[in-house]
Length: 97
Image: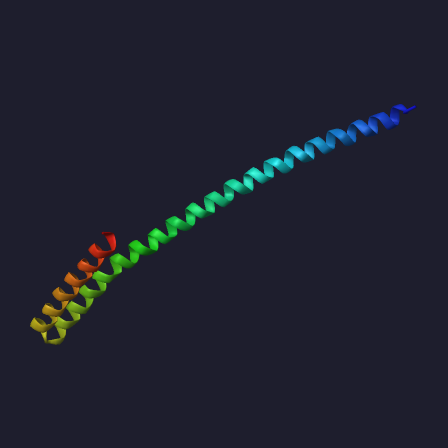
């Protein structure tokens, strides 16, 4: 027959095994949610990179225009600047369509 000590030890082992199983399942779901969160964060960072690059292009063009006005050839520089802006707008419309 089983002694009381053996019965208590067996019961403790079973309870600990159930707790570890539940804990393992919870850790699995936490890691699954963490993976989804990291994926969403990655998409946000990609969108942020796209937005900042789209904002920086016109600012760079404006700075080159200002440097051109300061340097001398203002009419030619203004025409190139406008042509560059129009081509960038056409490219963005083509990508969005």
